[in-house]
Length: 281
Image (tube, rainbow, N blue to C red; front, side):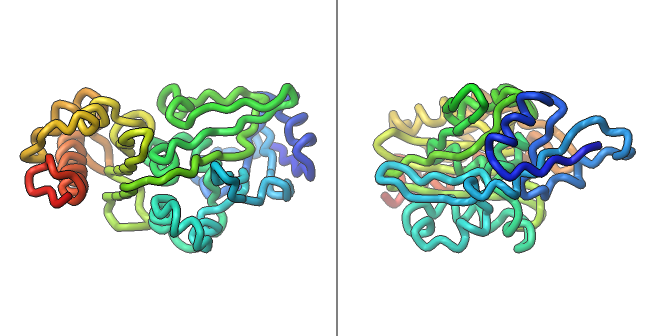
């Protein structure tokens, strides 16, 4: 096992270009021990510590987007009043991700790159139509977050690329809602996750722990665009089955996940949609 500590982005990109699949990017490192090999001295991978790349630490507001540098932590967003005012979805996702120690080190880009189907940060970012900035020695490419995952723990990032930023469009969103169901509200892996937004671009319904990846729900989004009447949570089950594929695992069951997802989605919609039975808007 080797560790590299580049001090410039060019040094880091050169390492990924040379080592390719053998290079493992490390930012906050909060998931490192969870995936630590049983015999680390026999591990032939090279861990590339990105913490020295100070240019990737900044997040900043542009007229049309919030840009999170690759080393922006969840705690950075929790401490940002402007994010709370304009993108409360991000703040809520950060609030329920682990303890304060984890929030202080874990990065939004690390949450994306780890490609967990239960990633709370990805859930919020996808509902906000985030785009990933991928950089290599060949140049910069942009990929919508909802097209970034190709399967369980699989992404479109090439071995010589590094995620250098996340771009989140700024626009008026009349609805922003984030729900996490777990053994505890925080410091627990999500059993069922839901993020909802509504803007001029349309509805965004994003599910966590309900498929091999965090994913948007196009059938459900179409139902909301057409204002299909809903009288009970059961009216959502057919669309849930079309969009999602929850599994039985050590944390929950597919049946539980489906029912809970239907219930929390219905409850959130009833608070803002007049065509949902009991709706108040």
